[in-house]
Length: 108
Image (cartoon, rainbow, N blue to C red; front, side, top):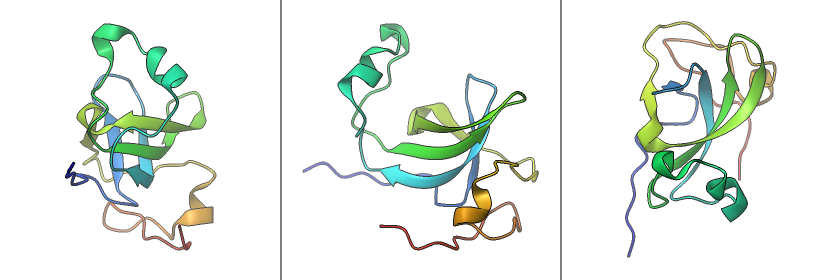
């Protein structure tokens, strides 16, 4: 039986290890749960293992806001103490406090 433990929590601000974006965790899959087509689009030498948590992020970079799906191995905690400006944050979370966004919405 596969046992996984998510390193990051809902409302936590994280950033990508290699790419210049950061975001807020709004959902977690215990293991890869996207399409095979999405997975195959990642260059083989960069493809993460599927048997780890994957995080749904309200993400931002200096040019745009979007939703990202990222493996745990490619994320680190963002300890800047700076809020994320994604326009969808108020739909799910309360005000940024102590480096975290408190969950406001009921998720399934």
